[in-house]
Image (cartoon, rainbow, N blue to C red; front, side, top):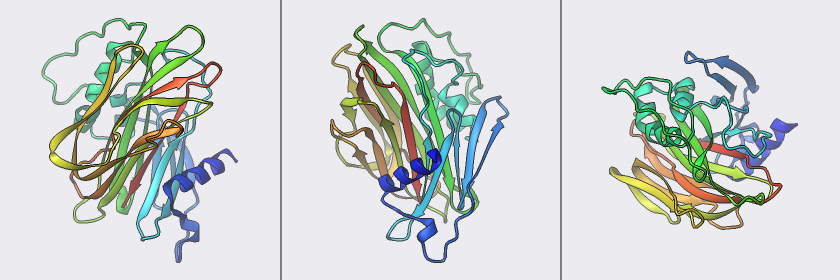
Length: 312
């Protein structure tokens, strides 16, 4: 029943019709499995209806369907863990190592997720185990974490679909404990980085979205982006917020190829936040990045449930 509930929520958020109701489409039975990748990380997988959902922690739920205008859509949602309020979840690998375990090419993994992994390691996060194929010098040792802005955890997920799973996306949310007021209220910062592409000439990716869902009374106080804008393959976009409690900045930067990027959940009462790229891309890489700052009141869980979605 738990998987069914997540499936229903995902379809409502996507605004799509289930493939089970689409004319002439018979969905494949969803199969769930786990395997250990070559770098030793356990990967959870669900497959069905021509799509694959992957994660490296807490399990994953696959949702598939079609939009009213006939586009295919698939999403991977991490099953929210039952976690206490701790600064560092043991056993969680770096973003780079997680996406490599899910099948991302190592050079591309370091290009997209190397900076956020290094930043996390500098404030108490896990060191990157994989070796950067592009690197010519060894990595520096990470300094000890500080009390404010220290590392909390990293959630990563991947979703693939279309012919031979050629439309694919990877995304990670690196979470920081921005501030602990000592009375049970935490301020949590999300730095979301993602990467997606289709295939030339077909199938082409027409949309990519990464949302962070939060529960138990958590609410946003800062977020970026806050407006829709056009994207360009020659421009690096930065999404940055500054904490009013600590003055610390949280940001992600990436080149996002031609299309447009819009925020989703850009209100204080929305229990999710992220961004949605739309356009049409074959081999050119796009992204749906964001940053946000959340208040976790006393007694609320500090967990999150990221949702990554692709359209083609």
